[in-house]
Image 1: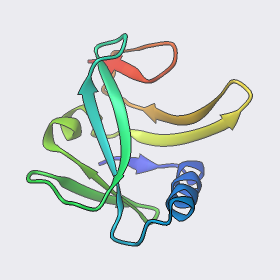
Image 2: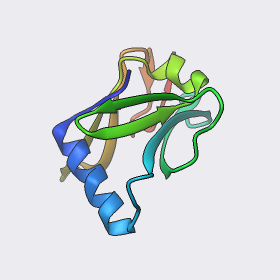
Image 3: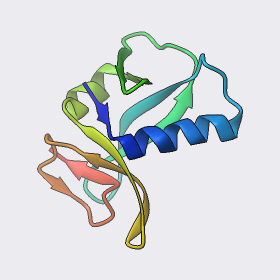
Image 4: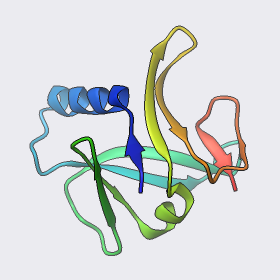
Amino acid sequence: MVTVTDKAKEKIENLIQDSGLDSTYFLRVSVKGGGCSGLSYNLDFDNEEQPGDQFFEDKGVRMALDMKSFLYLAGTELDFSDGLNGKGFNFLNPNASRTCGCGESFSV
């Protein structure tokens, strides 16, 4: 399961509202090959379920993960920072053995 902090929930809700998306959309969280550490995180909004999707809901945020991504992201917390040291979503992934300096990629 992937969880979200209150700050991440607020930002996701604002993005959905600003984009004019309806209630059929959910957050697709995935892992792709690439980045300086080997794997990179990806976030997007989607409204089409794919075969093998795993669905979770935390704090009212509905999320879908494909099975491969679920294996890498189980137990991860999604946070959002808007401070002076960087703005954006952060993944607090207990499965990552190494992350890059920007926090956008990792390895296991």
